[in-house]
Image (tube, rainbow, N blue to C red; front, side, top):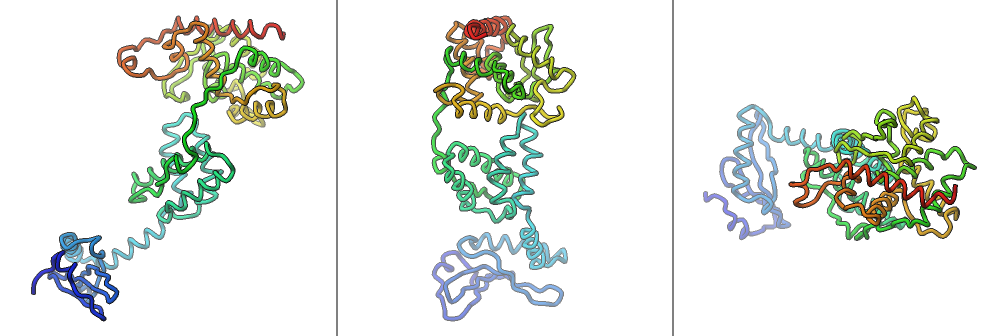
Length: 400
């Protein structure tokens, strides 16, 4: 009897009843009356004849089917039933982990190992992903599920957040693929299908706006907000990230040496960083020291006994409320991170060289500078921050 060939399979006549075409060694092609063609393996195990469906043609071709039969015969030689093993595998797939379990593993083994402040990823998961997908099996997730999650965010008119959540989903299911939970990621959507292209933020506060901000922050009517008030001032004074200012620890601050040393594990760049403290920065930290000396964090979280630091969201909400209430006049919207850009831009406007500013910001050098310029420019950074602190004091001196 002639063996099967791909060409013969393509030309095989479809009959009103199911037919089996033999290839040899237990391999058959089953042709259904509806035209479906499936490779099968016929064998005997424990005295019983069995027929095991493999893959349909052309998903599997003749060569692939023969290789599969060789693998199955090895199982038989080891006294293992191929059909029983296949059923066990299907049962395992049915018991695959949920998206909730996957997200917990992803946070523990991936995010917490790589991100200094992973709260945003945790927030996106808890608020936008898990309420929709958490109870589903990872193997059940399709591109339509992903579109549903993103669509709910777009319905709230939050395109930027849609992009962030899409990035989280891409990372989460990319992890699932890399660790064997999935063969391919269901996240097919691009940023174009989510929130679209984002314009880079360019908000920089002017000297007059910094005066307005200082006027608000110097108000003593609501002393319970002292953390947000001092933290916001330190962001613009030191040009550091709001998250790093909020998480500032007294163990990293030397008021006498006028140095704030950030360990690599708490910086976004994962590089240790030194920030020189100007007279203004020292004054602000002395105010905080009178309130939290002896505690771990310079700014303990609201409602916290000191075990947790102030959050960036607390700063963001403080600014948003002030803008909405008109406490900053008709000032155009800005966020705490814009204060860092303000400091960088204003230092440049006052003659600080770009490479010095980049080092103050703890940015990585680009291009050839990254290879050939390994200087830290500590004296220049110290002078720049002292100058910038003096500029702020000059701008705000009239309101004191």
